[in-house]
Length: 196
Image 1 (tube, rainbow, N blue to C red):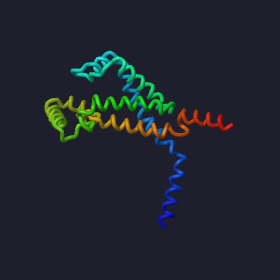
Image 2 (cartoon, rainbow, N blue to C red):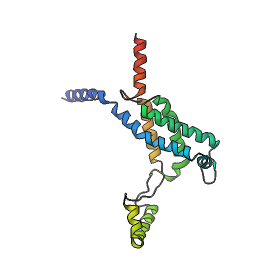
Image 3 (cartoon, rainbow, N blue to C red):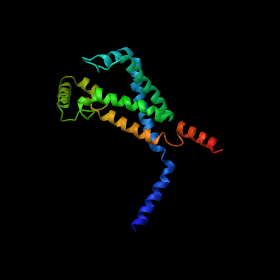
Image 4 (cartoon, one colour):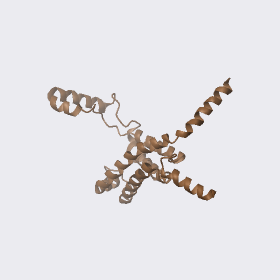
């Protein structure tokens, strides 16, 4: 009985292999805007980003800040394009993972895990008190600020950077996926050439 159930599960999951490309495609499409926006924002504010990367007092205090910014922009913008098309994905994932590791250890780690401060934190309590004051004294401004959603306090923890790192790590090992990636068609093309 147990063997039949196990075999049925195996057959079911074997059939799912035909649509296995959905998982890496979903990861890729999720990450595209993350890295595109990060890279283009650094590019649009290049001088400010170099200053922030290099300043040891209120910035990151990284060595060779201009080179670091250029590398970050290149990996994020080119990486976003590679993610979108599933092209050279494993090569693109490596510098993106390095970028996430640098972000984790130089920007976010001192703030703990959570990206958004929990409701019980001092920061969230103060935000709540401010919103109550705003509602009491400036109803129109309160309505304007809260009309599109509930304001939250940024905690700036490692949560998102670690999540992106894990998603990239998964793509590094699985690849871009079948059918909807340049990598898949390039490998198929050259495999057929070699087979002939």
